[in-house]
Amino acid sequence: MSKPKQKVLIEWSPNFAYAIGLIVTDGCLSKSGRHVEFTSKDLDQVENFLLALSIRSRITQKTRAKEKEKTYFRVQVGDVCFYRFLESIGLMQKKTLLMGEIAIPKEFFADFLRGHFDGDGYFYSYMDPRWKSSHMYYLVFTSASPDHLRWLNQCILDYYGVQGTISSSRRCGLLKYSKKKAEKLIPILYQDSECLCLKRKHLKILSGLSILRTR
Image (cartoon, rainbow, N blue to C red; front, side, top):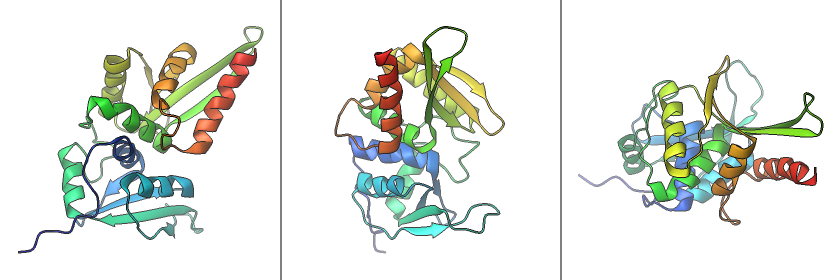
């Protein structure tokens, strides 16, 4: 019996860890037991995913839920070895509500976290009317799995000494880092100026921080 062909090089690196972060948030393991799918509304995100894994795959478009227009981009990677590796580190089919810990080497956790943020995180800022010239901002990670969010919070506390606040919205759980905590965490996410990331999110963060410095 021939061995399954391996498309993805399974070797920890900043880009590889970044790709795992993207899969944890926007990817899924198919029922086939061999295909890993990645879907995003952002074409740059899908291209980053392929670049992070150093592979080529056809990018297609699809709809979601009851939508009629194909507004999402998708790639499918057929690789049994990679599929089994993802299962071995904590991923699974229908992971959204069930996911818990993911086995990420500490030295690559920041890269994984950046992928997680690019997949399902967001940054927002505003002027707080309660105080004069008070500019507030938050760095937020999201997940529908409470266990996964608690694990993420604990890892960030253990590795970087930054404590987040967990809350919930109608759709998912939120792990928030406000102002000084976010200011400490952001340079960790982008410690390498050439790191792979979703540029529009990074620029939004830089814009928010520049307002703070100006004030």
